[in-house]
Length: 567
Image (tube, rainbow, N blue to C red; front, side, top):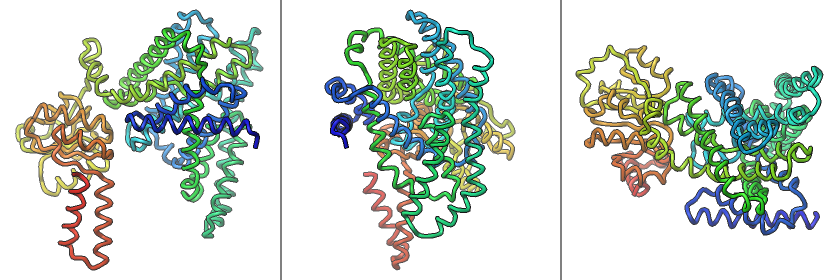
């Protein structure tokens, strides 16, 4: 192994360890530490790396593995069930952001070609950084997290034609019909290849793999998975797809074959290490001298790009009937710039379509936008509250609500308000139905509300974080509030608003994040239910029962463990 490679690898690992350790110690997101550490170590050890190309290559391996494992956990059935509404949001976000950004870059003195290229690049968001942050918060599987994932994947699909579009954009000759047909073929070819591979895997490969998975051979399972992944990625890359997107589609293909998750456990540790290397090498891409000499311009442009992109996404989501809290949450994670920026920028730079300073400008704004993510997402509540008090935006941010009028509203006293009708909220409602206890369901999913009102249940369509919506549910007369919305941000806003309206309210909250329990208790929550804890206690109780321990003793031990855990 060449000593130069070992030197590069050692520098990246050292930067990752120091940056991650300091970030954890200061209670900052580790991603922030990795990127900042990469910037510093990149400036100090620039001579160790032979070229930007080696840094880009390093950075893309981790992204490819992230998207591969992500595809592994997604089935085609789940993709088919995806709401067309969020797909349209993804498309509209890319197109509208591009159109609005063009005048912005023209104003900085760039020509029309460079302005269009930069506008397209900055319309994309970072799948790697956002997925890592959501994964750390346990929010990949909830309603906003799922929608963020779909928007990111829609954006990634635009990368394919963009890469081919770069030479056409800067061509001095008129684009003829042949070039347009070639562009169309380049864009469609990956889809055709994917469909052919899918048909092959369903008709032939699935039978072969079913034989392989019958035998309890760990090695055979891993080898079969690697073989399918390598062939699929190779075919899709040949068709013109970037490596990371090809890896995602390969993961989806493998997920259809027997749902065997053994390879995933083997890949994850390796993926996490390489993903950390991606964050560090991303920071190392920054040209420190250029950055220092252009700090004011870069800070202003990057803040405008991030803020404007967040606002554009928010507006699109609100016009698509997403609730204000979900719209703010989703748009804050979409406001950054994607990891394909260095790749597309490098293609333009090596083709002499953009100057070195323009390339450094692109990289600087890209890295700054990633550094803003933790601060944007960590201050969602403040952002929403500020916007909701702004005269021009107040009406746009407040959610309209409507509820079934057939319910005897004047008798609705001493009832339960259920915020969120997902898996948890649905079970709570079922128990209340059995016990004949009155309740109101509040949810921002119109389909759920239509179903409930269809069976004569009192349900309100609206954002449960909004005071007017809570008042529609007679929160001032309620005895109990059940907070079953999935994300921490919305939970805290619901609790704050509800207790302000009814200080005597008894609040029960579901929470996936243990670190939130102190904040929730300080806000006035009476009972915090952690699903993982309750599931563990229930399973533990079943185990104790198998050992002949009495039910009374089991309940005593469960209460003791729960009390110690929540102390």
